[in-house]
Length: 172
Image 1: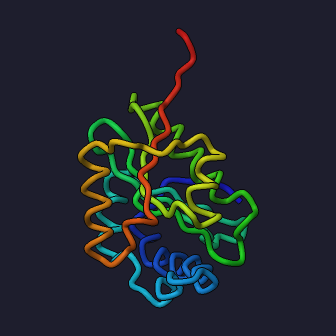
Image 2 (image 1 turned 45 degrees about the vertical axis):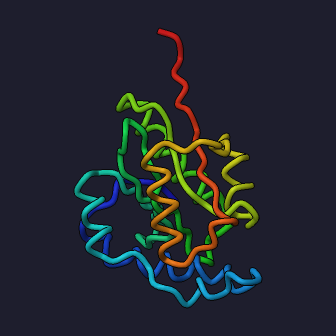
């Protein structure tokens, strides 16, 4: 498996990956409805792909098994979605995608990676914390906007958290 920047041709496969990944929510009380929910529209994937801020995980058989889409906002790389196909979870795919996004942030001089996620779902905030993300107590505008949009789409505000991972660079 290797990680690469997504192409427009990849956009057609990303909803299937996201749908498979969302099946995990069926086991979470009061979040099971997410498994039947909408996925990110292909047009939105294409918009982010054109910004070169989408990475995909590809197997040696040319199958896409995960993706991370993000966008530069306020000099930070905001992760909108990280999804790994159900058959490939817990095999380091998500970590590889996060490492690629982090490396991009280092190379482009960004200040941090940011995201919003569930506080209490094991593969969400606790997993990001292991990667180094910390909860943000006073979110900046793009994180507040993301949390507000999520609330408008029915995500429970009390279970959501904004997180940030500052970029560290080796001393020159």
